[in-house]
Image (cartoon, rainbow, N blue to C red; front, side, top):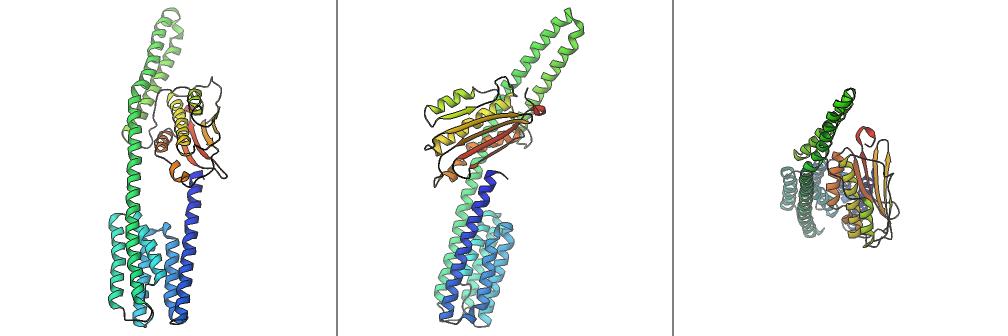
Length: 383
């Protein structure tokens, strides 16, 4: 499990626990209020229905549409029972809060038609309950105000979050599109690199053919390998331009990492750089991606963790590929988690994943932030 997934799971657990405490508090308060007015036995059915709807709200992530429909059905049964058996007005505050969570979540995440249907269904239920209600000394007017506020809050917050999600998705798509366009601009350099090598080997083969004809086969093998690599490079970039998910990019080599680290250290915290043997040679697209990941990670440190005391950049190599990790030691802040997953890393993740690698960014258990990328090299070994 990745660090980001662990963090998301923890955040979801904390949110669910907070909602559970809130639901228990509202249910307990409502129970005490009925015990002092109507008597506790009059709220057994309504209280049981409220507990079930609150439970559905806590597990809504598993099936948002189904849980919302079930919550509305149970609320409708509670309204009918309150009407038939002269029980306190429903939906009560606890049930209204749970319905707000269910419907608000549906409005945020479901397609427009089912989301609108669920919001309308709750509105119809609310209006029907209001028209069918008998006057009771239970503060029914307050109940309607609570339900109206819950409906407006659920729909308003759900729509606002939906708009933010759509804007974030659009921005992320723009970042990916810009990354693909940049890769397209690199196509000329990459292909020229390989074709130049082919031309040199072809010229060498002509000389060899005059002096040592038996060595021509070896030269032709080299030309064939260079041509195959050039073809793979073109397919990688063309695949990205076609928006496929399995076509890795290709790009020319970047400036040296030590120059990047030195430039960053002059303006930010000191950076410790550890790289493999300089004799190692990777495909141009891998070399470029390593540089880009480090650059983006250091940029994020400068923007969102200026109070970091040090940064460690580690580039390792094993038989399967290249591993890049950038770690800073900044203490967690109130806005750090929200800001550090910026759109720059979306483009880097696009580039890394199309190369067949992985990229993870997230907080460390105690303090600090980590950006970790793994990049396979051709045939599991550098060239």
